[in-house]
Length: 154
Image (cartoon, rainbow, N blue to C red; front, side):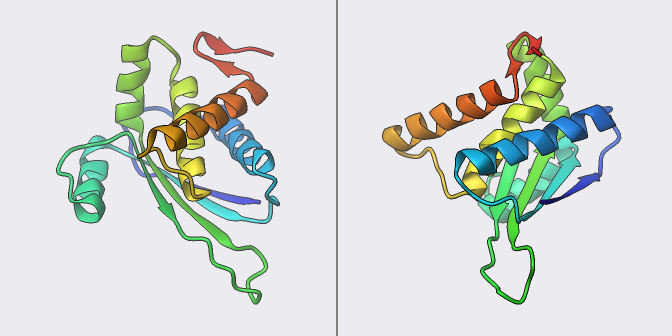
């Protein structure tokens, strides 16, 4: 698995520890789905201004959001590692939500990454049954990596 991380914001400190945990989170999403780890995934951290612009451009919604997912799985046998897609997280919004929900920034960013990974893997939450299945899978990954609302348990 190749995880490319691009931190394009300077408003929220995101350290290497978080990057390592996010790699673990992404691996667990793939393993839960019975997928190989033979994927490239791009994960970008942006500020609220940039995610608002992206949200308007790609979803025609003129406001900031916490995370955007851009699935791109390419079945090209000439490419040794297919690109699963891009995850873009507003670090500012993640920090705001972590405070609002009373948990750590690590927990919020991990959850947003899990949520986005399941979008990349083809899940959605438009219908109630889809939403229940997606939430179940998100919770399962968070349990597997031992990240809970009150912190990371080991």
